[in-house]
Amino acid sequence: MNNSPNIEPDKEVPELKEGFFDLLPKGLIEFLNEAGEIARFAGKFFKQVLRPPYEFKEVLKQAFEIGYRSLSLVSITSFIIGLVLTLQSRPTLVEFGAEAWLPSMVGISIIRELGPVVIALICAGKIGSSIGAELGSMKVTEQIDAMEVSGTNPFKYIVVTRILSTTLTIPILIIIGDAVALYGSYLAVNIRGSVSFTLFFKQVFDSLEFSDVVPAFIKTFFFGFAIGLIGCYKGYNSKKGTEGVGRSANSAVVIGSLLVFIIDLIAVQITEFFGFL
Amino acid sequence: MIFRSADMKNGPAVEYGEPVIEIAGVYKSFGNNHVLKDFNLTINRGENVVVLGKSGCGKSVLIKCIIGLLSYDAGSIKVFGNEISQLPIAELDELRARIGFVFQSSALYDSMTVRENLEFPLRRHGKHKSKSEVQGLVEETLKDVGLLDAINLMPSELSGGMRKRIGLARSLILHPEIMLYDEPTTGLDPITSGEIINLMLNVQKKYNTTSITISHDMHCAKITGNRLAIIVNGTNYSDGTFEELSIIDDPQTHPFFE
Image (cartoon, rainbow over all chains, first blue to last red; front, side):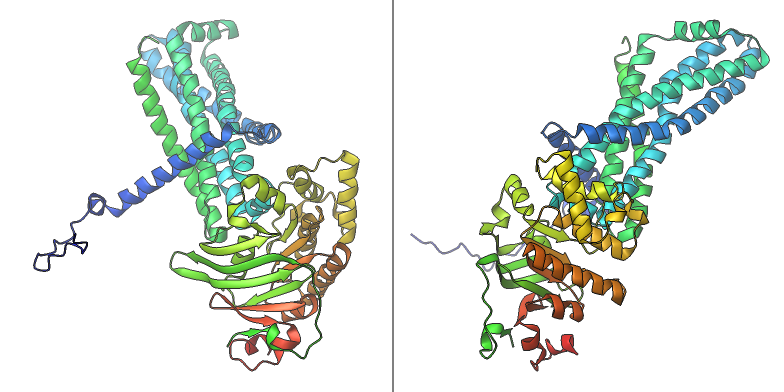
């Protein structure tokens, strides 16, 4: 039996062909790499979230930091959105003699789309950047290493708690923001006309259906998850010292905001597909 | 030339306990940057070894490998006879409770007060102590580093030297058997640096610790180290007492003592 390798010296060695990924633009490959890393980070979150020990105290602390400290910003911006939307829509509706539809139109706009998306974008800016910068700074000052040395799983203690907090807190902020925006709208309606508080809100809620409220509410959990995930991912993987901290905060806002729009687009498609819901 | 203290026979022999850290043939690379190459070092109980070397030569990487913060590519690191790379996470955490690590940047948790910073390792390492016991330990350790008054301050309110001392206190709170110091005097003025060195000596005396100190500071090395190890090109190039190494006429070793 001949065990020598089958060498054919005269045979031409074929040139190495470019792989599929070599043909793709560098930017696209970097984007795919980043998306893969984020997916892996999300996978690690789901793996860790179910395993004890459960850091309930830290989740509550973060929910307070994230939720309570964002409440005033969310309330003010929501109030202005409700007020301005009503003032801007009124002349057009008056032109068509449909002024009475103002509460319904504003209500549907705010509950279905404007409230969740605008408040999620505000949260991506405020909460996403704050998580990105905080974790980035913890990383470059070795606080994450210090936690590990102290017998703590830093991913669970820092990342899992923050993602859980944003997932649970941002929907609550959006509900409060929607309510404040509707109140702003009620005040705007009463600048030029006179509608009672009860009548305004009766008109708003009469025009809302199950398919307006439930999908809009469900997608807020995904917004919260995405904002927390990106903030933590960027901060936890921060590099290059203090410069990296700034970059982490910045890219947490950019990618978080982009994800809010992508999730919104997907949510709308799903809602349309199951239109009867 | 590689110098080992065993090469010099005329010094008085000092007896130490059994080996507590055994590093044999360790390799560690970051991409194409080969930081540690066949690194060997054994530290016996009661010894205080100072590791010297140029910036970026792998000194901090070495102690992070010892405590399991970084994994190594090849070789063996045994602490109290346990191979670090093979320990399950729960056992690694138990081992870490016996090791104090003082970070170069102090690594105090910014969102916690000094008291909470010190309580953190006690709570996390599962040492079930009553509230009064925890309070007593925190106060005693802060007294040791002379900063009891800072107990309710936030890290942002502390000076660089105070942060180092609180970092040291946090690593002492579990009464570790081994101390790992990562550049404890870097960035400090000579007076504060002297205070930190005195604290390290007090810790050695009071807690009877074995230690590895990473440093560029020859004054700190001379005072705190029983033995020095010099890293050159990722290996333990020279190894001996300060007096032994300072008289060697070797181009790699001599510059440290100029």
